[in-house]
Length: 153
View 1 (spheres, rainbow, N blue to C red):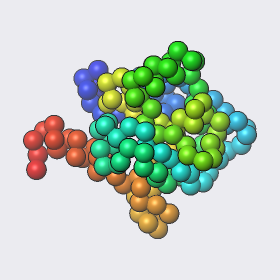
View 2: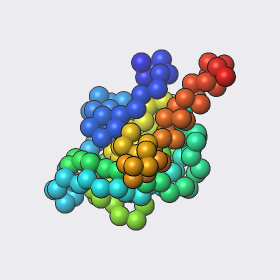
View 3: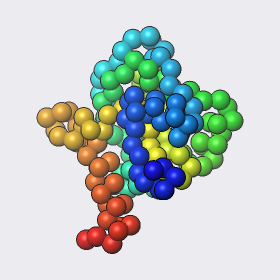
View 4: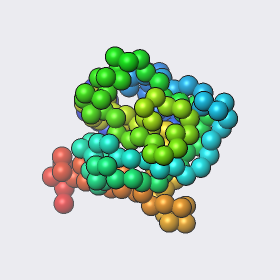
């Protein structure tokens, strides 16, 4: 499906699966604290030119919750340079890096931009009563992208 250009979103352990399946580079390790982390975090939108981030502004700070014990994203220096060069880093932790991820990385896309893996949970930030509505725009971005590609109103 990824090779056909279909959108694939892996959240939390889904991100881990995408790296283990080779659809995204790197790996997820135990949190640096060796403890499960469950809280609201600040993210910075690094790339708003993906199908998943069209409704965000580049550089915008958003609040999205995390809930993981294995959220420490890691990759080698060569991979990190490629991620930076190709604008594949989509989200970074801003302020507190809750799991020790290299360069505060919270989410990345593949080179084609149709596969996104991220540790924070946008689906848990769609109603104000959940503490944030910032995750909702990820899903409206996907819808906007689909409509643009398929000529739907």
